[in-house]
Image 1 (cartoon, rainbow, N blue to C red):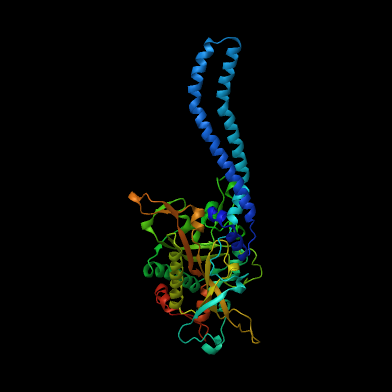
Image 2: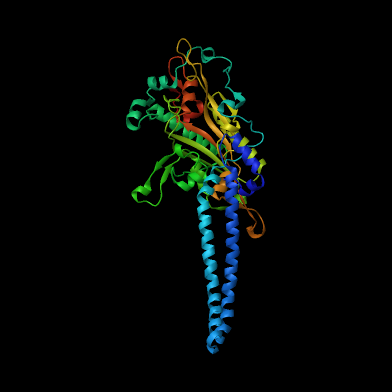
Length: 469
């Protein structure tokens, strides 16, 4: 959620930000509703103050009048009684006006909240302006020793590559037909060494973040209330991508949703909390099963492990102080952790600066990391794919956008810890999403005989196995 006060003072910043993100949001209508809402709240507050004043004065005024009433007769008695009735009726009349104003406020709220929750965080000024992922800018590449990024896989390794689908079939790593039989399209069953390699990646990723980089491992729910999805910014914009469990239809008090990333659970842990500034930065890592409907992705990457409905992901989250420089530094560090992770797996990759049109609602900046996948790309005359980069990681900087929605604050120093509260900043980045990360591992570490060498860092997690096949 954006800072409403800042929007009032700098509406053009949000108009421009939404336009650069290719998002249609009626900022003028939001400001109009905000004005009406604030006017009604202000009048309501004034009436309540008047109501309280009258309530305090009622007894003092009525007491003497009641004494006079006992002695009065005729027209005088009628006059005094009317005055008493008017004094008694005044608070009730104010109560009706206050209630009428509350009805006005309640009527405004649904549309006001809907628009407010849809206003995207403006992109940082140094983010390149663009319309879609096609306008993202490559920042740099890395390749392991012995790999020339300017040459094909065949030229580098001396043989034509198999795709991960072919390798999975030959080595018995994935059973796609039975996965589809069980759960429909974009489903799979990891089998034998495929499952072991999958688990090895996840375990290594957790240990890498916890032991090497000081993150605290956490387990989090993957079935959450709607408030968690709204609070983390995945609703309303991403509602069509989430699996919805309609518990209210079965008598429960609330519906539930399957999360598409461990970020939801990690950020939701401290919803509605005031943290101690001394506890920041908080560094969490989790591994969780993730679910995505992939709505709108029909016909795109339907074969294999690239775009699937269910997967496991190791996610890193940092919650830090409300300081842009600190957020930027953590963004750089979190990307560095992933680069070191991929380098340890000896996977060629590149970093992409996402343009404004590819940031999504909640990000001020985002860097994608794509691994080289020899089995992707257009096939040549012999049916051998050209190879291309495929996204495996996204590193996001969100400033206080999520924390404001989650009402997650921290208290500064001050005397006896009574300093002012401030909304935290948050960042997140994938560490490893599997089985997608298995694609570059299998395809880049394949051998001419159809076997696959297990990356050295994963061998301790596979009981010393060095080669599959």
